[in-house]
Length: 167
Image (tube, rainbow, N blue to C red):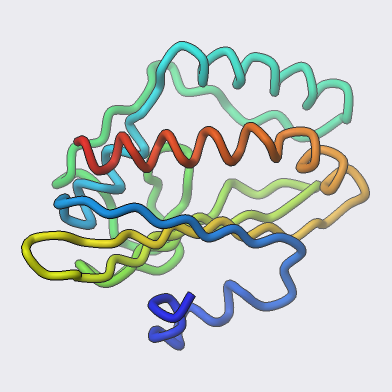
């Protein structure tokens, strides 16, 4: 958390949240390579989880997000750092090259979620990536939905992080 707190411009994302999760992983990728690898990770079991999520969305009456026609594979030089632009299904909110990258899930009635990465140089071409997920519930369906998916969230984010350093 100390590395993230170095950037006061990120404080606003941590205000009035209901859930926060920060994971770290060390690797030799650049920030762009790491995020690109994470956002391009789609093994069969994640696709299966997305299908199961569709059932949950239907049962809880949540907003359906438009499915991409094909799964995005983002090259590092294609990753947007411009606020308001898309990066996979996320919307970039704040980013500074080689310093941090923060995105938000599309507008939804049940919750608002932020996903961000802050690198920390360790030396010898090694970087520690601090990956955070922040959630603010907006409706009673928010905590219901999130508590159902929470165990999968930890698995998915951890595997995405591994894909990011192996990119």
